[in-house]
Every structure is written in structure tokens, then in C-alpha cells.
Image 1 (cartoon, rainbow, N blue to C red):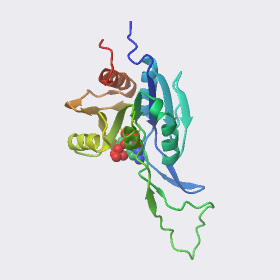
Image 2 (image 1 turned 45 degrees about the vertical axis):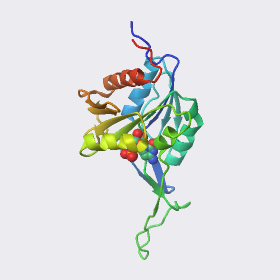
Image 3 (image 1 turned 90 degrees about the vertical axis):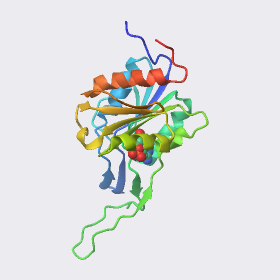
Image 4 (image 1 turned 180 degrees about the vertical axis):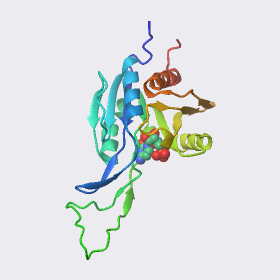
Length: 221
Ligand code: C5P
């Protein structure tokens, strides 16, 4: 018998990268396969939750029983999240959201000509979706991810405090991109806990259990 740790809970997950257009054929993006976010959506569904997954451009099938909405840009992801965040019990922000978008994306393809100088891009900051949700008056339990290339211990805890979320899941970014395995450290108010390296699907179930037992009104099992 497997206890349904998230029965009756509404869980909102973002996954994958965002894509910010430069012109109709070019753009900038963040690196993310979406595997960890999709694995978490699947594990939350297995745990009995009503799961909504908002995904940037990824090549992954929708986990069974999960309601999926595809978006491209950070702004679209923000708008989709804000539609459901206040009605969710848990928000797991796994997406690698592009921090900046191109200020004046061109409506037409920018032509490469022999005489013209290479184009210069200027950027505007995108909304921080996780921090925005965490500030809502009735905020869901917010879980953030931190992909760092070094000093995870310091950066993970700093990110938790800066974004004002109860739980940050840290991983060493470049070593995990696109891979099927991951190694993470949990940062919460009690400190840091390292979990053993595992397949992303197995890890997702462990993480869902870790999230479930931290919910303010968790039933003790
Ligand atoms: O600040 P940083 O991008 O490293 O924080 C990562 C966490 O914040 C992730 O959970 C990511 O999904 C979320 N995030 C967001 N909106 C942004 C940038 C990051 O929700 N614009």
C-alpha cells in the first residue's frame, strides 16, 4: 500500500526553458531538457495530486493524468502561472526561466548583409515568476530550484532567503543538464540536506515526499 501523500492537493509545476525571440527565426534560451520538472509533475500525480504543468519548449511527452500548457516566453509562463497560482497548494518552479528578453524583438527576419554591421541586442529583465508567486497574500507552498556552477551550499541558502521561499532544491547545473540522473541538496529553514545521486524519476518521488511532509497542514504518516 502506497500512501497518497498529495491526495486532494493542487500542484502547479513549471518546467523546461523559456525562449525569447530576437526575430521570427532566432532567439535566446536557457539550457533545460525539462526532464526534472516533468518527472516531478509525474511523481506528484502518482502521489494523488491534481497537477498542472506549464512547460517551455521541450521534446517530452505529457505525463499521464497531468494537465499541460505549453508556453514559449518567460512573460507567457508568468501569465500562465499567475492564472492558477493563487488556487494552488504547492508551486514547484523547476523551469529555467530566461532572466532577460530582447528589448525590441524584430517582427521581420533581420537580414545579414555585407555592408551592415552585426546587430547589437539590448535586453530587458523578465519577471521573477517564483518570487512573484511567493509574495502573493495566499501563496502556495513554494519550491524553487537552484542550478549553480559552484558553491552550492552558500548560493542555495542565499537564493532561498532572497526569493523568500520555504524550500530550495539545489543542483550543480552543468553536470545534470539533459542527463537522466541528478544529485541535489535541499535547503530549508533547518539547514541543508544532501540526497544521494539518483535517476530523475526516482529522485522526483523522494522530492515529492520531502515536499509533502513539509506542507503546513501535512498529515503525519
Ligand atoms: O535566480 P535564479 O534564476 O537562479 O532562481 C532559480 C529559481 O527561480 C528556479 O526555481 C526558477 O524556476 C525560478 N525563476 C523564476 N523566474 C525567473 C527566474 C527564475 O521563476 N525569472
